[in-house]
Image 1 (spheres, rainbow, N blue to C red):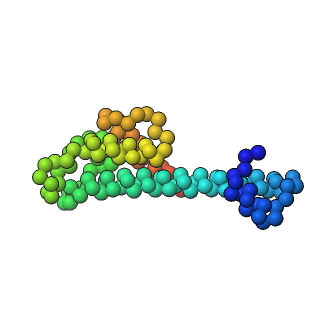
Image 2: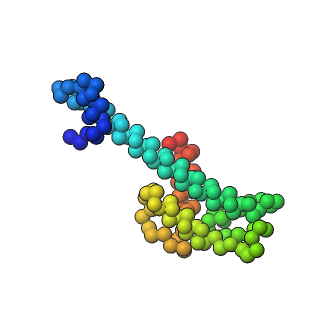
Image 3: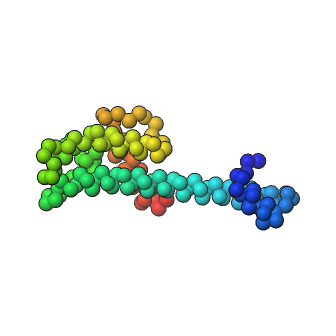
Length: 139
């Protein structure tokens, strides 16, 4: 039986005994604590990924102050340069997308494939779709 040290310490300090009923209760509490911790960390990682993607979108959309902003798919797959009035030369977006995909990969969201300049836009679009699906399903 694998029980976390913190749950066991609290259990014993609260006067828990080693009777089978008490141990069963301890295991149930430990299982609940582990599930909650997993959900909290997953939600925190999703929130961090959402903030990274939103910062990228906000930065690129600044270049479209008067016209309709491009779709997310266009931003991630087909848009190659950002033309900004404050910057003299256009900014290449491919290295920024690659860096963004690498940052998200470090958050351990289950990216199985290696991130390359060619596939980083597709990976980011899949992550964006996954996050939007999570928000719609209420998880």
